[in-house]
Amino acid sequence: MLQLGDELVYFSVVFLLVMLGTRSATGASLLTAFLYVFMVMFRFPPVPADQAGRVLRPRAPTGGVPVVAHRGGSHDAPENTIAAIREASRNGATGVELDLSFTADGVAVLMHDETVDRTTNGSGPVSKLQLVQLKRLDAAARHRLKDKFSVERVPTLQEAVQECIKHQLTIFFDVGGEPDKAAAVLHEMYKKFPVLYNSSIVCSFEPKVIYKMRQTDSRVVTALTHRPWRLSHFDDGTPKSLSTWGQVWMGILDILLDWAHHHILWKLCGISAILVQKDFISLDYVQYWAERGVEVVGWTVNTAVEKEYYQNLLKISYITDSLLEDCDSLY
Image 1 (cartoon, rainbow, N blue to C red):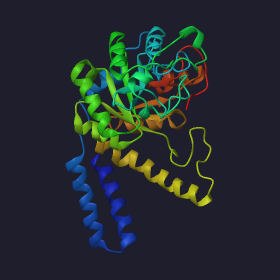
Image 2: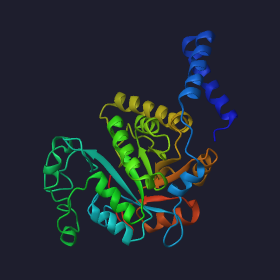
Image 3: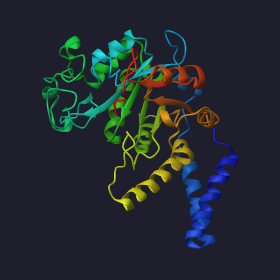
């Protein structure tokens, strides 16, 4: 839980920055007071710690920390498919991370990209394809093990949920956008399958998605996903902007977003966990969040050395592309 001393520091910083910018103590006081009242009135309390613990700390089959298969384990099987869910369970995962998308007729399906080009034998945006068209595609067509898995169909969200429940896997629902639609569809899943309250978590890079989910159903366990410098750099570290000024501006926004994640957004949304890119996690960082009642989950941990570090030193959950061997990260 955030300590009172922390809040005093944060709002004092806001007061000083506004006063320096406006040179008005009255204006700075009013704005700071408004922000404080807003936080008190509109923030969501986190779900009970025992419920969050059941979701975030399920017992691993082989002992140790929980291991979550990224997109179902995209190196071991075609990503975001029923085959990937089954393979993840067979290989000892405690959970799977699955990506939510929507077809042209509004059906929730599993797909990471905006288009089907990278993972299937089809082409075009997911949002422009009807479910019946999507179901004709082979989701294993471009996978390295396509001969082993033959034809795999793009599953609906409900089909994937039912398969995960069957294998007693924790689900990390990764939502990229469309907060209203995603919250409504997920709420229906939770009503239809109440076991999800103790076996799933909704996560997103977008705070508005998490806030909307809590607003729709405050009993759902949630997490913010975070990677420092995400606005100014691609996942592999290369700059997004070719312009020097553009890079500087996006870097400033990155600093502000990082500060907001660690000091405001986590409490406003009432999250139970934060999913952080593996290169930015340390023992001190884990302790920082532990003092606030928030679990840290690392992604994407893909080598034996990294897994050893998470299992034996950090002792926190991690998300991986493979449970069987070292592999490159899939961005």
